[in-house]
Image 1: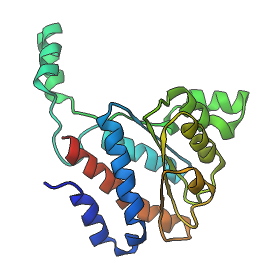
Image 2: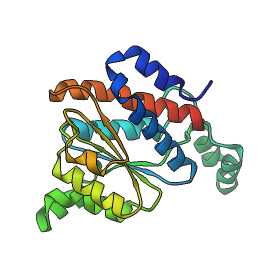
Image 3: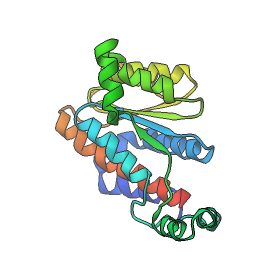
Image 4: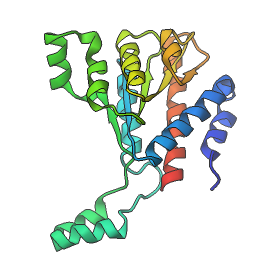
Length: 211
């Protein structure tokens, strides 16, 4: 299957997304290169966008539409440690692309919210997890979420690449993003409805490339 098949299909199915074709392709290539070089993706958002963050990680860290069998070498190492358990693990585990949703750490986030500043929770996580070469995907329907913006600033300071997934005019997050995917809608629910096919296409394209 040729590269970009799923992205091309995205724009065929959703002509309204044509204005964001360039940043979608750029975002895909940034994530592809990130994973190919052994780096990881960090994702964050608020409310429905928090759920989208978890959704994206779920599609990347396990099989989406195709099997991702454990390589024979890895399976062999598992069975050397424990023949029965290793065989079970080799049969059931799936290849994953390393991605972390920053929205799923309630102990850390509530502690930082209580002790320091809730608007800096995602920034703290990016500062702790992020490394040069990683990618941060910030989801904000307005493009102006303070906690996402601050996380973007930290990501850039660490030498990470930044992808924005937003709507309206892209807000100030657009100014600190390497790829700003600003869907052509103004209402939150309509923006979110367009975000899903975009990140599904990105995840499908990445799965096809690596597996």
